[in-house]
Image 1: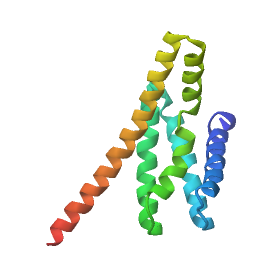
Image 2 (image 1 turned 180 degrees about the vertical axis):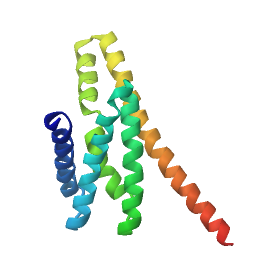
Image 3 (image 1 turned 90 degrees about the vertical axis):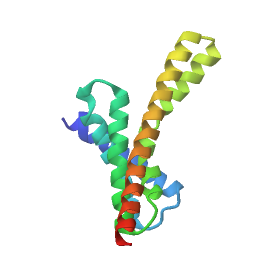
Image 4 (image 1 turned 180 degrees about the horizontal axis):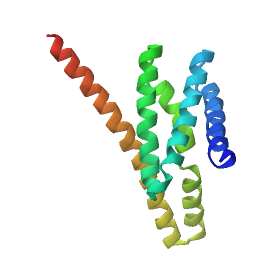
Length: 149
């Protein structure tokens, strides 16, 4: 259990910490919580594995991560992108992009198309997950403002 679940989540948190430095997040508390989002996203990704589809895993992880980023943005009174971009790094399909280009250079058209479409599907599920949560939060805020009037 330790090597199958907790260690990958720890590694995702560690990788997100490195990107906190690259994105110039300076406050230690924000660094900790932004990096923790990466571990949370990877934990949700692993917990969604029994569903069977890795696209759903990415989608579920991105929805959880986007909600986490919105909550942290309200707590720390800063933009949600500060938490979202850093914690999204472990989910980015870098290996898929690499292999897509590798197959393209080798001239393996069928593998190129298969890998490219799968990578595009992962990127789309990440984008749609962020879009849904962000739109829901903006809609909630708009309705909340309209009720005050």
